[in-house]
Length: 427
Image 1 (cartoon, rainbow, N blue to C red):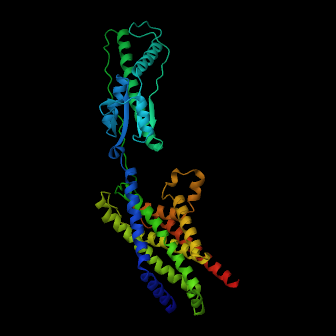
Image 2 (image 1 turned 120 degrees about the vertical axis):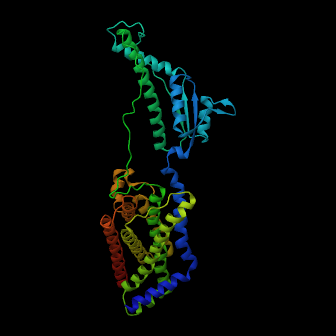
C-alpha cells in the first residue's frame, strides 16, 4: 500500500510540474466542446430560425405560381429573393447564382403551369362524367405535364433538399385538390340545377402533437447542448490516452521504469498509480464540461445543459468512461516503443472509435454493417449511457449495461498490458 501511495504521489508531482501540458488537458477539451456545440447548434434549430436564402422565379403568374409563392413567404422558412438591383431574376441568372454558391436553392415555375393543372383536372372530370353531356366540361382526355425546375447548390444537404421538395409537393397537391373539387362541384351543379356549387374548405381535422418520450414525467427537450456535451466529453476524455501513454514511454526511455522494477512491488502497482492520477484528471475534465454546459453555454446564446436528477448515475458513467480511457492508454503505452507510435496510433484509433461510436454521425443512420461494428466502440457505450441520463431521464439501473461494458473494456485492456509486459520480460 505504501508503494502504491508513493507511486501516486510521484505521478501527481510529475503531472503538476508540467503546467503547460496540464493546461492543454483541461483547456483544449473546453474549447473543443464550445466550438462544436456552437457549430452544430444550427442543426437543432428549425429552418425558420436559420433563415436560408432562396431564389424564386415565378413565370406562371396564375394560381399555381401564387400558391407556391404565398406558401413560401407564409412559412417564413426562407428569405425569398425575386429581384436583384430592381431587376427580375431570370432562369439563367438563377442557375448562375446557385452554381456560384450565393444561394442554396433556385425554384423556377414555368409559364402556363396552372393551365396544365386545369387541363388535367378537366380531363379527369370528363372521364368521370363521360356518360353525361355536360357543356361546362371541356372534352379533354390527354394529360399535360409541367416541370418545376429546382437548382440546388451541391453543398446543400439531402435532408434540407427533401424538406423543400416536400413543401413544394404539398403546395401543388393542395392546389390540384382545390381545382378538382371546384370543377367537380360545378359539374354536379349542372347535373342537378337545384344544387349550388360547394366552396372548398380545408377542415384541418388532423393535428400532429410531438412529445419526446421519457421514462420520467419530465419532458426533456433535445437541443445542441444536451447532445454535444456528452458526445464531445467522451471524445475529450479518451484523449487522456495520449499523455498517459507518453508518460509510460518517457519513464521507459529515461530509465525510471527500470529503476522502479528493481524496487519491491509489481507492474500492476505502478500502472494503478498512473490510472488513479489520470482517472482523477479525466473526472475533473468531465466536471468542467458539465460546468461549461450549465454556466458558459447560456452566455453564448445556447441552451443550458439540463443535468437531471440522477447525479449518481452520471458520476458512475463518468468513472467507468475514465477507466476505459486510462486502461486503453496503459495498453498503448506498454506496447508502443516510441512517442510517435503512441501519438499516431492513439489519436487515429480514438478518432475511429469516435466515428464508429456516433460522435459525428448518429449510429442509426450508418449502413447495417457499420451499425453492427459500432456496438464494439467504447465511445458508443459511453455516449449511449450519457444519452440515457441526459435525454431519456434514465437512472443508475438504466446505464448498468453500458457501465459494465466500459469496465470490461478497462479490465481487458489492463490484462493485455500485463500479459504483454510479462512476455516482454522473458525476451
